[in-house]
Image (tube, rainbow, N blue to C red; front, side):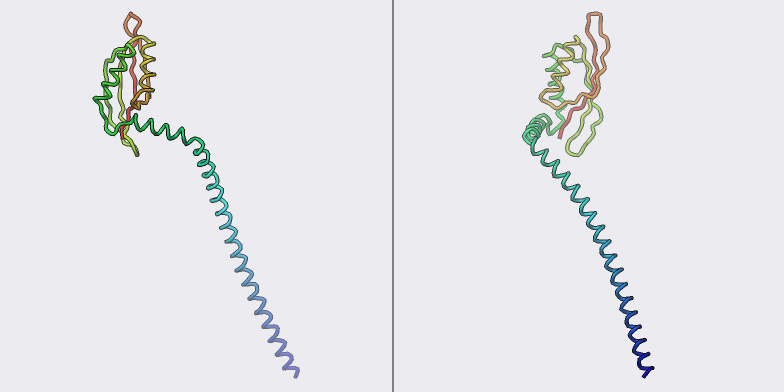
Length: 174
């Protein structure tokens, strides 16, 4: 009888030990699962913050949408589909005459293709009175063709008070 009690006590003790080990394994698995879930929550929270910031930017853009659409329409007209060097030369010549400057030289440089348009670097040389050249620069910057002035070098001209200007610029086409 004592043996039976001992055996059943040992069996009970062994089964209790097995249950404790199984519970520990289940706890470790749950802790690991909770850790993975916490890491995933942090990742999702980070993504959510980024998306909120992006949404805020989009909301700001909707506020200035009319101005952006107007700028797009203007640029669509100012950027031709082809280089049109001949028309560009005629346009610059027309502006020099309107602003009483002398058009001396134009040189087209190597083109650079960007994602949606091509840059056409140009070197321009002019001479004239300072105020006339400044008016010409304003006219070319705000004119009917998109031309970005990247550099300007002004030198003294003749003794009559004129100056020479060398302009580094870029014209664009699609």
